Image 1: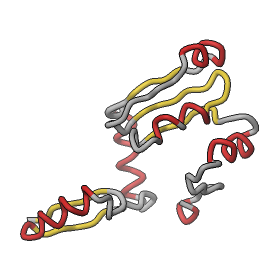
Image 2 (image 1 turned 180 degrees about the vertical axis):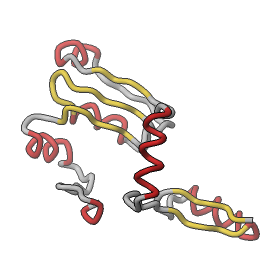
Image 3 (image 1 turned 135 degrees about the vertical axis):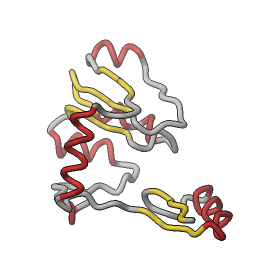
Length: 132
């Protein structure tokens, strides 16, 4: 992430909520959860400042947020499966300019069982791609 221009990189350890609060001066205006499971979905909302927003892109888990917290802190939670056409064009331009670094692991068709095992055991970063 640092190589791609991130100002801060956090390891997601037990103090990550406090670290985000300290870095942002009270919580992030917007948090995007690309994971949506493994407990991430239940800490992301704690990183959002009053009046902020949480967008969930990853799916598979369940969010457990006290409704009083949402109301008192005026936090909005939304989900997004895809962006709009304008955002797709912008993303393709960034990719064409070499500004998007894709993380993936290629598997040939003969190693599809290895790919499934790696996916199940979370042994690759990004996406697994089956190449015929």
